[in-house]
Length: 507
Image 1: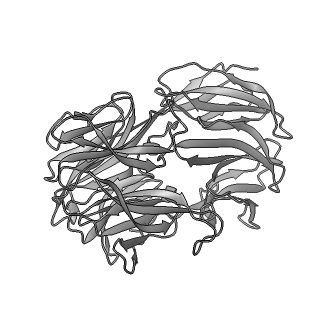
Image 2 (image 1 turned 180 degrees about the vertical axis):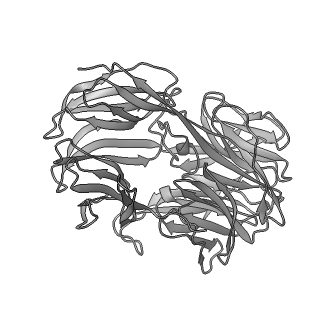
Image 3 (image 1 turned 90 degrees about the horizontal axis):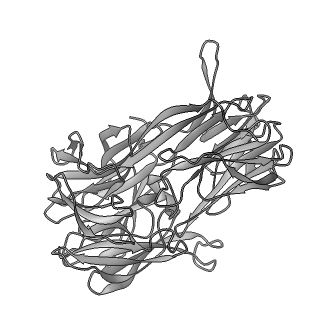
């Protein structure tokens, strides 16, 4: 079953005929006169322009290291193009709305706001945009406006808040040409822990069943060694805390609570401790560039610090649930008491290191003991951490690594004791967003993303993928039980309603 391929198509309103204009491109915007199309390049992650028939494509703007460019939008006059320049580093978001002329020159900043979630440019030089509220209300947003010069893109005046609502999250806003009627979607997103039973030696997956029944964000972390209890983290108490829940239970029991943000619990190899990562609560110390790896006794009692960890995954101010799962630092523990756990952190390579050109991100794998802390560095991997996922084999000897790519489906197996890495492809299952070892240590579960949902596959280490589940959900976390009976995963489920404001505020 082939996966989708990023492409831009043109459809005729007469006869509904389709014509492909360009592969490996998305986020297309047609110029006001209909002669040109601006787009995101899926390969370079920069912006390009082409004629409306797909010809004479050229680069408009290359992406700076660490930044993503998206949402290219034409000014009404067709002489400038606005776009978002976005970066997340150490838990902090940088987000700038810029514009350039059609040759990629004359950059002008219109707005810089890390909590902006959507925008559109009205014809008369009016920017309408949505901003998420500060924590703990980051999943609500409100509408703001800012006037700008339609010729230069320079802001005029200061931003003005137009709504002060609760319980709404604005996306896909539009304003009629006369500026009187406003339409938008109110979108809700929620993550939960689901379990699906594996059958036929793990080659088939029964229908998933929802484990967490609250209306908050819940993510699976790890399992008890007997495979009967799921450890999870949830913001049901206002910030992320650590919980455990039996596979047949309807309610979760708290393990570690408090004002800090706590992520990704896992059991220690000897089964005595629940390990998790902890950072100061977002907003209390937003510039924190390190956190703590903690341990809580499974039998109950206060948590203790195991060691410091470098960095902070996701964004401390994000209103997107996907920013609360995955990322770096992250850690895994094997299921054998005689082996150590592994933490993965990011660092910058130096220009004098082999293969380095300037400063490039790399992932560093280090062993640690839940009682003694950090030990030896095991491996380094040049990679884009935002697009790379990993998991530790059940025996703690190997790391499996997948990378999100629109055109490739490569998986690497790296021996931590040294040796030649193994590579194989799970084509046609591209856009890999999660990887997890099966309990037998001989195969992998992988999540393959698409605009129509996520597919879960199982692959031998020789690259023989088999589809287990095709879902309309966005699934970014896979957690198989150590006894091979269940596959836990965390989907994000969206729903939205359309609304209109018939008398929108004017200048």
